[in-house]
Length: 62
Image (cartoon, rainbow, N blue to C red):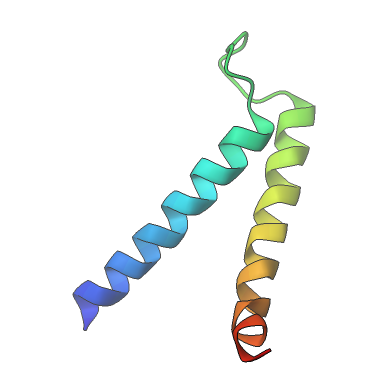
């Protein structure tokens, strides 16, 4: 049971990172830290990602 939960959490984390990184971070790194725009984008993307997870069971019922 614990292994399945860990696998699920790891999958969610990896999907979050892949999705938000692709949307918010340029492929050309100019600075070692996120700039303000990237940071705001990551915050919004993360919030939307988890909001979509909260609504996912409702979508399956329709």
